[in-house]
Image (tube, rainbow, N blue to C red; front, side):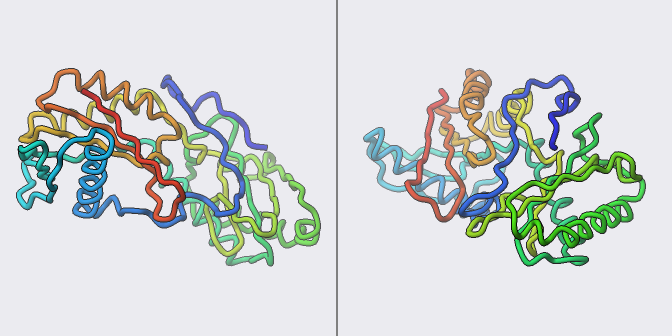
Length: 301
């Protein structure tokens, strides 16, 4: 049902991107509580300082007396102060954010949750139902329409009615039900869709609520090599020529989809010449509840 689009990359070098698993025991990662709120600067810096000091002590066997937040951390001043090997070092903290990825993810989440609400307002099924909506073949760009509210409302009504009509089959069978929209006035926002019941005891990995979960074709979010290099450039331009000896660049590995080696390579190349004495890249899964938490730290220079 969902098709690979040939026109999405726009000349960029795709590193990774794949269809989401439709369901799991714990549900989607994006809906689970975070370990730290990225928007709470003080908590982020405190956590990074704690993790960095542990790394220095336990892995590098360095002598660290303490670390503290720097109250005067504006104008490229240190975010943290670390007493290391008898000397106080200034540390700046920066997050590695793939903005194109996050922008596309946020757009997908917003539209899918809107559709979920529109559908469930018309008909809320007694079971969890996954809905995969295929975008037009010519493009996996976010669908554009002159009257989005009207079109999405009509699409929601069509899907809600089909769920209601087929609820007996959805309840009794674990099979995909496929529907085509090519010959309707909705074809500019969707080619077709399928319905699939989420198995008992499982949670959907798609966006939504009220037993309606959506996977829209364009939310197959991709990561490109060019976006990684642009982000490395941005971190360098924002943080270089500061007043600190150490730079820690951190990121949520859930956003990277196993592209950390590409990120490290891009950072290494960009920070070959820098005002920092040392640069580190730290990544971890930003989830509050996780077994066997792993913190990855790589020295960049």
